[in-house]
Length: 60
Image 1 (cartoon, rainbow, N blue to C red):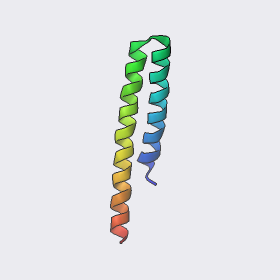
Image 2: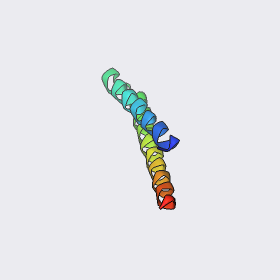
Image 3: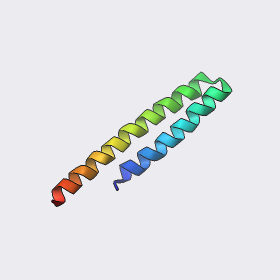
Image 4: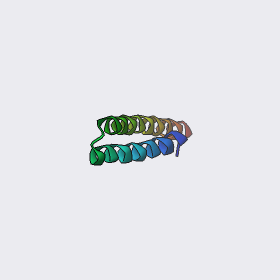
């Protein structure tokens, strides 16, 4: 498993927590930051998946 996948998953969780906290507290800025961080985590996770796929393809 690529380190980008792990870091991306962590960012997604952190972003989801921030987004939820922003909703509960009525803080639009915190909610927006959480959504952005969650999206960045999804992108980083996808990059890690692509790296894993490329690495697996090279082994075959």
